[in-house]
Amino acid sequence: RTGPPVSPALAPVVELSADRLATAELIAAAKWHSGEPVEAPEREAQVLAQAERSARLLGGDPAFALAFMRDQIEANKVIQRGRHADWYAHPERRPRRAPDLAGARADLDRLTPALVGALADAGPGAPGCEAELAGAAHRVAAERGLDGSGRTALAVSLASVCAGWAQPAT
Ligand SMILES: C=C(O[C@@H]1C=C(C(=O)O)C=C[C@H]1O)C(=O)O
Image (cartoon, rainbow, N blue to C red):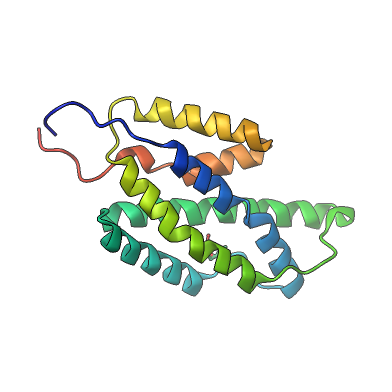
């Protein structure tokens, strides 16, 4: 890359990632009641296809958007698995109601273009990206009162953000 480093605007990426993660407990509860496994490969393929389409529409890098959304999906499963493990061990914490999985997935489908757009707006990972990302994640985690597993999952969801686009030619 030539010229000065692009300053990434990472706060929206982090906020939207936290919004996406906030769906995971409800989805875990829906699957707990239905007996469906956490992992739904066909649904993941739909999410990734939508992300790729959004990246092309928004002028982002499809490969970068895909890597980013894979992390987002992994983070969601980290939370779901954690909730299921907790509910196996602690019957009194099990969810009494079965939330609507289709509704939660519709929420996720609205978040996908917003996330991919925020990633495209943030631009390539510039020097200082990791520090800015960590700072934004820390702030959002504090604002939302995330516990240890929530913070870990948020970090998982953001793992590729600073990798940026194609590596610049030097
Ligand atoms: C969120 C879900 O659970 C998992 C995570 C997904 C995601 O983050 O988009 C998609 C499919 C599942 O592997 C779901 O089933 O919708």
